[in-house]
Image 1 (tube, rainbow, N blue to C red):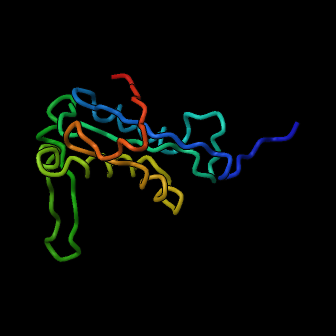
Image 2: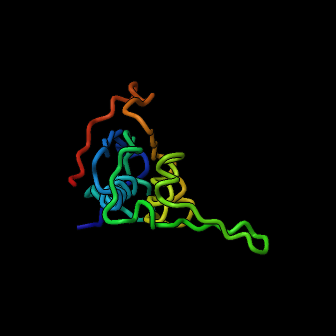
Length: 144
């Protein structure tokens, strides 16, 4: 028996919408990264993008355990002396929750051309509305 290697034309990509209101941030991000990379499918192949499209709604209503909402810091270095900047999880949640999800998912995807292609299939929205009705996304429940 020969090993089945899917061709890019064999891959059927679906659209999923995930409502993350009241869910735990880290658990949701890990499961979303699996769907984007295609690891939830039996035809997963590391060198081919077999993952699906994911739409995240209610991103600003995500939960995080403990005191991480105020104590978790995201660091950014500007490149200049004394240019280390830090912002809290709460700051990103209030201003740009899409960056929280994008950065967290990017940390779980491969760091190459294929990973960048996978990340382009992620769409994050603060509220419950999204402009992807024409793709007929299916609802996806990822657990807690």
